[in-house]
Length: 389
Image 1 (cartoon, one colour):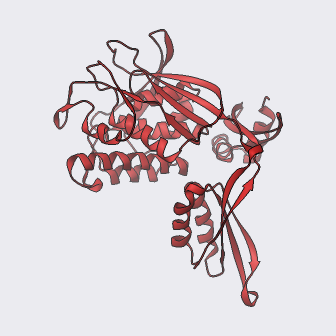
Image 2 (image 1 turned 135 degrees about the horizontal axis):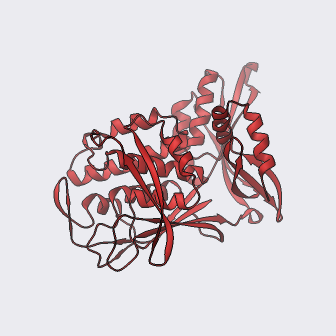
Image 3 (image 1 turned 180 degrees about the vertical axis):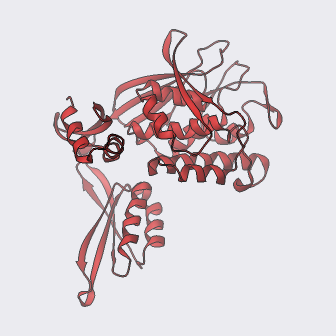
């Protein structure tokens, strides 16, 4: 699934979160997931908005205790790492904060570990960033593209004093990206908004091709702009499968015979987190009939170097075989189904225009089962029965 952002009034953390909620994310579900962050008490409030003829949503992060600490990058990474969020959400959220820290460090002539976040380290920004990354995961997004972003002009007062627009951190983050000048005397794109969009676009690149528009969502900012509605549109797109033309895939393989099995298990999880399409192991007999394990990793060719780094650093192998192969894949889409235990995402596979397979998202089934106190299998089977195609 591809997520495209088109901005009229700019981009901030709350506008991005608002657009994703307007796409159909259940704000109660999102809020319950964020409660595992060990932060000060907060609440999420969503209201319907109308501006410039567009209807959408505005999400507000309500902080119950305004005497909250400013945090360093290490503090924020520890909070995210210790939470109960899914690993892809943790990984993506930390990458956003690291990108933001690098931008701040470049502006102030220091290193990321010495950056003391101000507004960015505040509670509402933490919830905006982690909440937005969680929403992207909940939507089943694997590709993000961003249209040219509009920028305001003039100056703004920050903790560091008077700064030109866009503020230095935003300008650093947007290097190399297309932007559009406006006559708005406001900060339209914030560092948080720029970090989210730039990180997602870099981590989940999109290839050109035909797409089908599934649905759209509109997120509104707090300020009333002078000449345009203060909105950000998010569009969920289903790419047309290119299976008939062949899908090129990289295979990485190596034999392992002197590793603790538990380490192989953690390795497979890490490879999947870093972009592997599939990872599996096969029992094999090696030289002198030593029992061993054949590790096989399927990947996109651009992810080769990242995955090789993990294999060489996390295993005892001295070499990796690699070759390009072709695969045929089904057209697929993600549908949300409501069961009596909660909402579950289900992947639906289509062959020659006919839906032939369905697979509930295991993490969703586990979360619903734990909340309801029922077997995971019970949630899984009800999710399958609830799919309407």
